[in-house]
Image 1: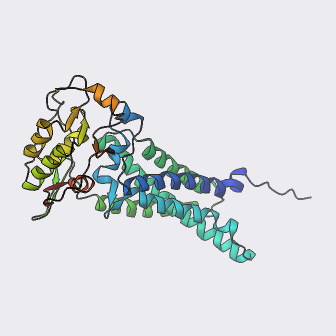
Image 2 (image 1 turned 180 degrees about the vertical axis):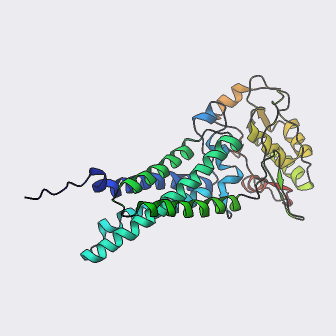
Image 3 (image 1 turned 30 degrees about the vertical axis):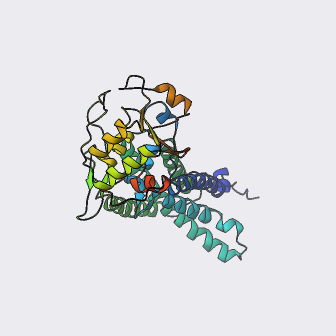
Length: 329
C-alpha cells in the first residue's frame, strides 16, 4: 500500500494568510489615504512624546508620488495582492483552468511581494536616515510586505527554485531603479526649496541646530503682499495658532508666511506659545483649548491640525484678498 504524502499546513493556508495580511495592509493604507486626502493630520505616540512621527512622514516629500498620496498606491498594491491570493479559491473553473489560475497568481504574488518588499526597504532607509521619525504605520506596512514575500516563497512547492532568484533579481532591480527615479528630485539638505520661475516655491525644513527658546529657528523666507494681508486678516477675525518653539512643523508654518507676515502673527497675538520654557509660554491656554499637536489652528471655532498651506487658511477663514502666495508645503 502506497502512503500518500501529507500536504504541509503552510501550503494549505498560505493563500488565506497572504489575503489576511493584504487585507490588514489595505485597511492601514486606506485609512492613511483618506486622512491625507481630507487634509487631516495623522498623529501617533512618538509625536505626542515630542518626537517626529507619522504626521512628519505623511507631510514629507516622500509621501507624495505623481501628485497623489503614496498611501493610495500602497492601497492599490495591497488590494491587488488580496485579489491574487483569493482568486483561485473563489473562482469556479475546471481542473485545468484552476491549475493555470493558481500558477499565474503565484507568480503575480511573487512579483508583487518582491516589489513591495524592495520599495518598503527603501522607505525604511529614508525613515531612518532622512526623515528620522518613528512611524508605526510605515513599519507595519514593511512587515506586511516582507511577511507576504516569505509566505509566497514557502507557501507552495516551486519546481524551479532558480527561477525565483532570477525573478527576484529582475523585479528588484526594476523596482529600485524606478523608486530612485521617482524620488530623484527630492532635496534632502535642509530648508529647501523646489522652485520653478513664476510659480510658488515648495518648502520643507529639517533642523540642523537646536531651537532657541525665544524664537525657535530663524525665518529665512520673505513675505509678499498676499502673505501680509492674510496675516492681518487672521488677526482681525481672532484666529489662533498654537505652537511650540521646538516644533519643526511650526517652523514650516512660519516659512510659509515669511518673516514679515509672521511678525504680524506674533505681535498681534495670533500665535500662542505652548512650551512652558518658550518666550511668552502659555501652556494653560493650550491645555484649555485641548491642543493635541503642533501647530494647531483654531479659526472660527474649528481646529485645524498640522501645517496649513496659506490657500487653505484663506479658504477656511473666508479671506477675500490676493492669493498669489509665494510658498506651499
